[in-house]
Image (cartoon, rainbow, N blue to C red; front, side, top):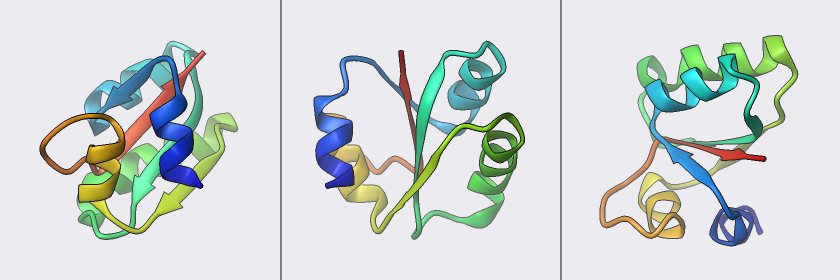
Length: 82
């Protein structure tokens, strides 16, 4: 279900740095984080999301999350924007 939501999103932001920037700008409606990603990569963005009230959805695989975004590599963090 979560991967489908990412596939159907009209605009996604891939990557921790870009997701943090978009959240600080108030553009993110939901955040997807891969459970198999390293914590040092994802912790900052998850903490920020919780602080500002952005829903966080955990998914199993970076590879599948990347595939849902239409890229050939894994994605640790994907943000859906309005």
